[in-house]
Amino acid sequence: MGQIVATPIERYLASLNRAGSPVLDDIARRGAERHLPLIDAEVGALLRVLATAIGATNMLEVGTAVGYSGIWLAGALPPGGMLITLENDEGRAREARENFARAGVDDRVTVIVGDARLKIAKVAGPFDLIFLDTDKQLYLALLDRLVSLLRPGGLLVTDNVLWDGEVVPGYVPTPKKPAEDTRAVAEFNERVAAHPQLLTTIVPLRDGVSISVKQS
Image (tube, rainbow, N blue to C red; front, side):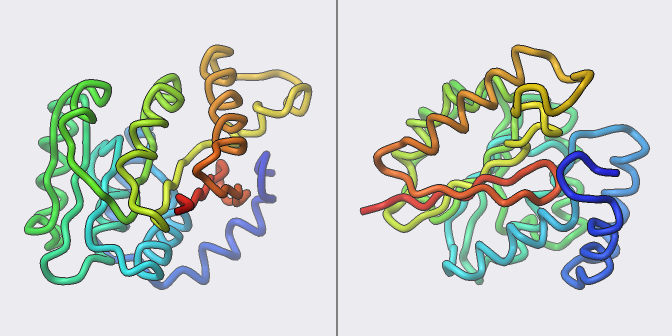
């Protein structure tokens, strides 16, 4: 059984997801074989719904991996829209560009390679939606800059905020995650919940998704 949502419920939700594509399915399958840290298709569908709901035309992603989540996001963009996505690993960034081309969204995606802590200072907003899914110890360090890049009413969406349940002290009898990462995620959750510019809720989908709207 899943730590956050019971496995039969997750399978039921997956059976209702009609927003995917053969390219996304192939990337997900190959990613699972390689144990890559990709989002789940249900989280991908949530990203696309959120981006569509707010009419996003300018989005930022921190943590490209091989482009899976970026394809979900870019699929919501209208003509002329743009997704900027940051990835520290050159090999993964190269693979992501190939996958964006396979999915037919490469004309609306820009991949920037390098340390997010450095590259984020050179990115210009405002953005309608920012998706954060990178090294968990960077979450808190990047938070204030990401909030400043959001437009009022824009969304900051963050993955893995329940961390397989390990952010809840004592919930997991034998923790498997690095303790420093668990502390980083828990501290990020506390800061986001109390942030004066953000209104936040957490959706217990897969590994937990935090959704914050920037208040004007």
